[in-house]
Length: 522
Image 1: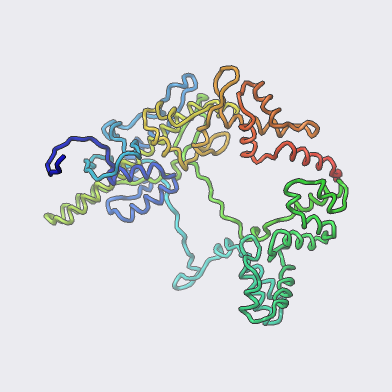
Image 2: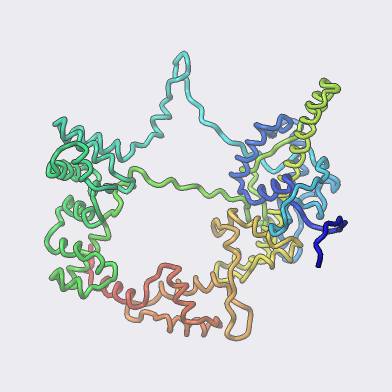
């Protein structure tokens, strides 16, 4: 077959994601706190965007929009979802076909242009605002002095705490230099992060001198600090309590046996009976394996809910967006008109302002669509998992993303983006939206399937209620669950038990026997 060049005209259809659609998808995946940070960046770049502080005409413009942020499920008809306030006029809302978020990632990316001028002028999704740090003038002329509140919130680090004690404990300048180098090797948990031989080589002093200074530093507070391994850390704490004896030393020498719960072997190597071994293990468990974390604890990121679920006045469930953490932005059309009037025929300025107007309108539109989509998904989740909210985890239903997507008429990938990294606060606690999606386990009697999360909770409660004289094996748990109508295999029970960090029946039997052997304390 001969090769030749030719021109063909072909027609094809494909869905492409413009930069604006990519922005809408990105906003849908962000939680409320991340959304505030993103909007703050847009406010600093786009002169036509303004933050709505909730006063003046902005409040009047946002009232209708705020009505979209609350849904209520009628208890009399759970299949019927009604809004608690009148919808804003339909011409201000994007149509179903214009949903910028309901697209599939599997489609190709492109840059096809679309008409982006249609949008709303205000977004009433809340009044969240980032608060910046402010420094107090403190009476200084240049305002550089710090106020008292800065010193109150300043917590000393582990290094500062050790250096302060070292200055009182060690007087010789040479030993202080060695001590400072050793303290610099301490990690956040309180352990030496490296060997001491390089310190001796760096400072040009004998290794026994380094070890002598280290021994003095190991007597500092907190007990167990500057240890080189777990065994030494626990030994330092026991010496501080005057509880380090040959039996304890033997127990620390065989910590792997303690982790394996080999109590018979520990009794043999320590030379003690059951009662003494139980007391020794209790003392070990009372020690702190990471003494340094008391001074430099890991920063816990607070969980801020994106959706609020509470009881309505008629007994149904009221679903709202957390407006305290949502940004509210406005498009300043008056400023756009004023700039257009003053610039006259300046083409570059007009093009720049037109781009800013399109970007602002699309951002407002995307924020609005994000709010309505999250609310729609959360409402359907609450409708299908109402039994969990009413009666607890045992009534959690099996649920997958497709069930929600089919119920609300959206793509499955859209539901996945909405439920990722977002939390809902309910009367039963704060949960990630992904928590309500669980696999199903068939019923042994042919009835409705059981949620995997509900089965895990059932296994946990069975083990927690087992007596010391009748520890439940995995086979026995399978029998009890099948008697309750749950068709489950033994390996599945073992997998769920391990996921709950519950030891095997053999280990639990040893632990319970050890607790029984432990003497009663007044």
